[in-house]
Amino acid sequence: MVPDNEMPYLTQSTYTDEYGVVHPEGPIERVDVLQNPLSIYNRSIPLALIEPSITFILDKTRKHAATLPFEEARDFIFDIIRMLNPYEAKELKHLYDPLAERKKKEFIDNCISLDENELLITSKGIYIRWEAFDATHLLRDAICEIYDKYGDVILPYHIFTPKPNWGRDIYIGTGHVGYMYMYKLKQNGDSGFSVRSAGAISDESLPEKSNDNKTGKSWHSVIIASLLIIAGTSC
Image (cartoon, rainbow, N blue to C red; front, top):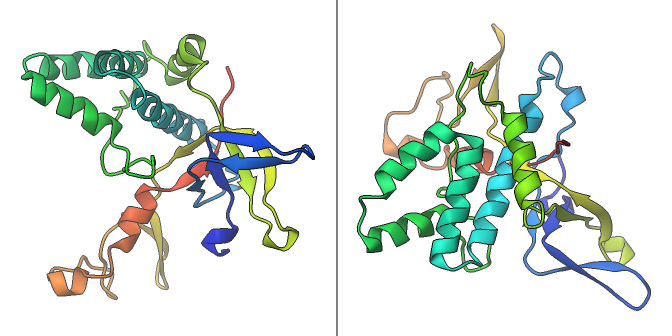
């Protein structure tokens, strides 16, 4: 555990000074967790890389769509969804097409959802449904298809590590960084570790019922849903 301001952070652009030193430029996003998939005992599964790879693509999709005219943003978003899950894309189009023009614009605006600092509003955005046990549509193939078609806009982040004692932050390089949902592990002295989802839990390991008891205990539901994990995939 380290202070938040000592964690690596991400930028979409950089500049180089007259001495050849790379500096961050524009809004920054702080990384919450650094994960080494090889250190997760008995959980070294491909999805640990696929999930943040997909959320990275959707992150970049929303940010690029924010720079496009409405119709181009709509087509771009639906095309990304189609490649990741054609079944979901068809269902969304069925819901989207009958909408009034004003509602269609609200729909796309909610998919993008950037705040005043050009950072993602994580409670909104694009949600992709994973079709379990569907061998006809593989997520890895979908990721490769997206990079083949949109590799010029789905670009990796620039990663910096703070070094306040050095007088500047250190440029690590580029990387693919995405969101990942994580469960909260709660220690139980009688039965070892037990897994609990985010929410307000009492000292007796039961869900809190009153609003007064819930207040201040559900903070981790936001943090966990917004975790940034350094990860990547190659095609």
